[in-house]
Image (cartoon, rainbow, N blue to C red; front, side, top):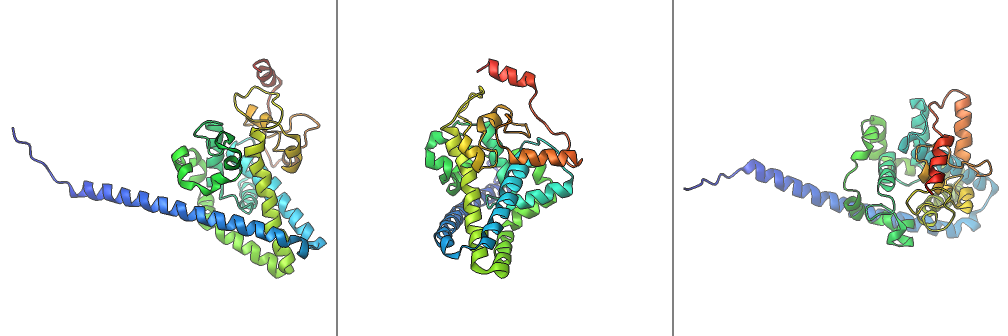
Length: 301
């Protein structure tokens, strides 16, 4: 019996369009890899000039921006508020703190939160975006230069639809580079090269490596008081450098906790800020592990 072969031009066009879209997407990823590499190199070249442009004004500008973009923007906002939903904020304050996080130069909130949620979902497996099982330098920094590889590992960003559905975060995703250039221009206009180098190069390098060390060092060296079935470690040095994020085994044991430094002696600057916001009635539904949850983790270790 003869079978008629029906040519479907719309189907062919659709497949061709998807193929072209995939090629374009991969090309964009390569461009981002190159941009990230150039940005990273220039960031560290600027560090070489920092001692020659030191001033106390520039030092304090960098220090304040480190607190705003690192402790508040990255740790409090990106990590604990947006990614793990460990507490709630009024939208105006949520958006303001997320804007601080944007200036840490580690990607817009959608990218950062999606990557970190994949990290927790596939922690220290072949699908973890930045695990030291692929080598120290890959987990520390090389992963940011391999966007196509990350896309293959993570496959999609459907784990961040809560942010994609908000126009504000879509706006930041489309325009985030402009905000960095705007801040750089503002720093230069107000304080010349000292403010520019210390407020951008020094500050961004500090926040970058303070965060990257969590992916590398805190999955290799430190203590493991909790049974998390992964490589996460508490590292007291990074507990100080990263304002409290270095108690990484604590975090992996209780991901949704707004408090990461669970012991009184474990410094946790964002937690102190969250408690202040809670006292003022601005932070609500603040989550911390119960004593029963702690005992369960201890008994399974």
